[in-house]
Length: 131
Image (tube, rainbow, N blue to C red; front, side):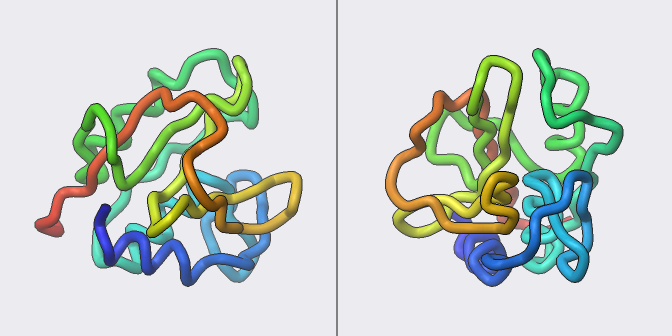
């Protein structure tokens, strides 16, 4: 787990949820959370746009991970893509003892303790060297 990324994500807990949100002052969605945490940790994210809350495939969004200096790993990723339902993917940031994520139902960024309750579709580790 990248400690800088985890700390940046933990600092965003309580930020309002907003679909396609990219500014903590007005709200973040799960993509915005990952992008803002990466930015605050000194990385240069390239977040996707034009996605919906529900989608059968995330393949069109995956190239943004590589452009954001995220490399795929089989497990223990810094950023995790989980399938919360068959038609909804969700990004989370790994933190000590759990995950930080933008929770639409609660309306804010929150901490999810323990292991994920959903299947993991993909995981990435942030490159330790910032671009």
